Length: 299
Image (cartoon, rainbow, N blue to C red; front, top):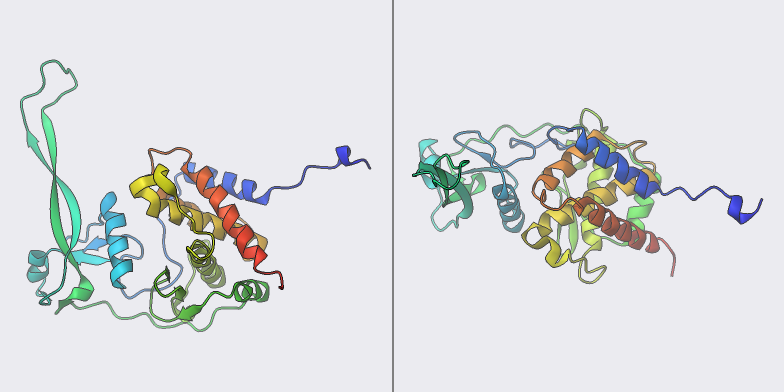
């Protein structure tokens, strides 16, 4: 058979990206974590008094604050709200900033037929994490389930990268200052409605491994001026898409999971002004996967 008659090479990355986009456009719903945590909710920062989830830029702001300061619970409240709950913010604790909007009525612009006179003004508020207060009763810690089932090919792949990985606690993250990946205790993994415990564990691990690949000593991944304040969200898109690629290539998952679309959709909401963001993230994700694959070669 001549080379011109050969079937085109399958692009599994493009296929997965297309499936993820289709799932996002179909309204995948809210994301959940594949491991148990003693705090609630599982994903979104929540106000301790009202139990309402924070939204908009406050989600990113509180996620970043929790990451930088090492908080393991997504529960926050103002000083006054903690007092109402019978808790006390410890002396010397520093607050984190959130923004809320107050609405007031004004005279409509007579030259604008769509002006209803409603005005909104931004106000800043200071909140403290549950880890910064005394007298707050945390929910009981989840009971461990036992080790997850190992996937030999995935373990070999991760080991070959040389990434330093620690297990313990209830959080998953890559910390640049120590150049290590922190994974929750694997016995806390419980899976989701469409992902087994094992799939959830390795999906989380490959996500954090992608963050590890972007360090300044490796790919030095910089999302650049294009994303500006949304660069943190863009990096999360890269990590989740790369994880989807790796899970498919390593046989961890056999199809595009709804969980991934839910997670990606959450970040895309924060970048809704950039319709091409997911394609840029997919390209960066492919670069990360290629880098991690090169580390598999001896010498």
